[in-house]
Each structure stands twice: as C-alpha cells, then as structure tokens.
Amino acid sequence: MSHLPISPAAPATSPAATDASGGASRATWGSRLGFVLAAAGSAVGLGAVWKFPYVVGQHGGGAFLAVYLGCVLTLGVALLLAEMTVGRLTGQSITTALHTLGGRAWAWVGRIATFNAFAILSFYVVVGGWTVTYLMRAFTGSVLANDTQRLVTEFSAFTANPVASLASMGVFLGLTALIVAAGVQKGIERAGKWLMPALFLLMLLVIARALTLPGAMAGVAWFLTPDFSMISGDTLLEALGLAFFSLSLGAGMIVVYGSYLPRDARLAGSAVWVATLATLACCLAGLMILPAVFAFGVPPDAGPGLTFITMPAIFAQMPFGHAIAIAFFLLLLFAALTSAVSLFEPVAAFLIDEYQWQRGPAVLAVFVATFLFGAPAALSFGVWSDVRLFDRTIFDLMDYVTVNLLMPAGGLCIAIFVGAFIWPKARTVLDGSRAQWFVPVWRVLLLVLTPIAIFGVWYQTF
Image: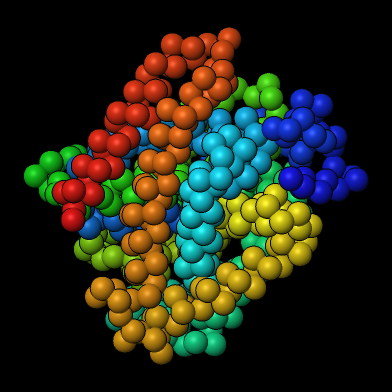
C-alpha cells in the first residue's frame, strides 16, 4: 500500500500513526478537534440544511424528527464507531482496509462503498452548483422577489439550461477538488475548522430572525410535536436513509477519516460528538426554515424547492432580507462543501491506496470522472428531463438508489464485519476507556438492531 503524500511543510505525524503492516507514517489529523469538525462537516452538509427540512415537511414534522433521532442516536453512533474503528485499525481507505482485515471477498464491499460515494458525489455536486449560482444572485439581489411564480420560473429555467447547470456544477466541483488536493491537515482539516463554526454561526443568525416573525411559533410547534399517525413504511425508509446520508455512513467516508486518526485517539467520544453535531445541525436547519415557512403561509411539503424557490420569497419580505439571503446561501455553500469534500476524499484515497497514485493525479482523475458521471444528473432537469427509469429522473434515481438502498446496505455490511468477523480486534479500541461499558451494547446494536432495522424498513417498503 502507498501512503498519502505529506507536504514537507505539514506538521509531522504521530510515530504511532503507522499502517496495518507497520510501515511508514500516514498523514494524520493535527488534533482530535480537527477530526471531529471534519467528520461533523462530512455529516453536516446539504443533507441537514437542504434535504432535512423538506423531507420533514413531506413526512409530518415532529413524527419524522422522532424517528430520525432514534436512528441517529442508536444505529448512527454504533456505525460511526464501527467505521472509525476499521479506519483506525488499518490506517487505510475502506477497500484496502477490508481487504487487510477480512480478505479479498470483503474488499468488494469496499469497492461498492467507494463507488457509492462517487455516485453520491456525482449528483451532490449538481445541487452544490445551485448554491454557487444562488449565492452570486444573492449578492446582486436578483434572487429576491415577492412573486413565488417568478422564482419557480427562474429556478426551472436555470436548472434546465445545460450550459449554466454544468458550469455551476463544474465551479463547485473545482472548489471541492482544491480543498482535497491540499491534503489532510492543510486542506480538509483546515477547511473543517473554518467552515463548521461559520456554518453554525450563520444558522443561528438566520434562526434569530426567523423566530421573530409573526406566526413562526406555529412552525416550531409543528416541527417539534410528533403525530405518529403520519408514520408509514416510506417514512421509516426516508428517516433511515437520511440518517445514513446525514452521518455519511455506508460509503467509506468515515472509514477514510478514521484512517487518519492517531492511535491514542478516543473513538467513542468522537463518534458521540459527530452524531451530536449532525443532529444539532438538522434541528437548527428545521428551526431556521420551517418557522419562516409557516410565518409566510408556504406549504411545508414544497419539496426540494423549499430552499431555492421558497426561501428567497421569504427573504424578500423580511427586513434586511438582502443581507439574510447572502448569509443563508453562503451557509448553504459551506454546508455543501464540507460534505462534498468527505465524498471526494474516499474516492481519491481509493486510487492512492489501491493503485499507488499520487494525490494530485488522483484528485484530477476524480474531478474529471465526477463531472462526466454527474452531467446526466444535471441534464435531467432540462434536456434529459423526459429520460426516466422506474418512473424517476436520472437525478432522482441516483439519489434514491445510493441514499436509501446502497448506504444502508453498506452500513449493514460494516456492522456484520465489525460485530462478527473482527470483533476481538474491534473491541480493543475501547479498552481502557471510560466507554468500556458500551462494548456489549455496541455489539448488540451492530448485530441485532442494525439488521432488524434495515431489513424491517426494506420489507415495509418493498
């Protein structure tokens, strides 16, 4: 296995940060805080700020929130810890790590997970491109309008324009590639340390304004009060899929980030912190968008357009709406970048670890492949909008298969691998820690609750 190149100017890695074969040092995080913020940035992306509010709106508010929180605080923490463990034990990306620990057959699980990260990145950068364009429009003020129909028309025209859509996607993908190309400490960790605090600060600013609107408390009550009659098999599948998506589980991202951890890092506490920050971000996103939606009488089940169509109309009716719109779309861009980086990195790390590529060429290759693979998803809003498979557009099909099917399947494989195949090694990561009591609970969550939850949801849905 080759190791990630470390810039001569980067801080030296820990002597303990060797790979599974006892070779040379691998790049590591500069601090535990850097890892937690980077991993939380992976979790806190468009899944929290863009997708979570409209999915909550489509599935009954508080009831969906309760199911989602249940998934995150049980399966989410257990699987975060499992993926961190696989990465920390080997110092390798998911395919190489599973091969090292479990043999050639398990390496295929890693390859599928890596492809899934690549597929998610390919449609994710389409929405990321929207954030770039709408941030520019926010600065000029052209995004603000009281006429919702005009905003619908403008949004549809923009996403249907192949040149504009592909160009914005390319800009966003280029920003992501630049961060990943800078490496672990100088790129990913530094970006996380700046973007994550800025993200939460901007969310709090928008929330402070939204909660002062007349009628906003009705949105808060709807968001926080569960109506369990709204829960269906589709609700459970969406909640489970969103939990995996918002925590970056099942596609190798957390394994790769865990591989950059030094040997003395406390994994259990890190897993809890990442899950907590991700949950907090989703709740803040709900409080940021849904009270404003209710205050202005907008249907909460407006779908993906809730962010790019509805919110500009709301900002246009707010005092200081221009400044708030800039802050909101800047927030959205930060959120998109933190998650896109975590999707990009495992694909680049796969080329580095499996084929001994240098980081620069690996990043360039992933950039080109992602642009080509993501182009059909971007065009599915315009010239290819009539192309449908299983009654879904290309974008919708990529979203559904990767998030609702492949991510839970990847999480299930990791749960079985850690809980059954490498358990004697895996449990050692908690030896001597204050979380020792969690060891038997962790195994039950991995081998009992995770399979029951995933197979149960799939059965109810299909």
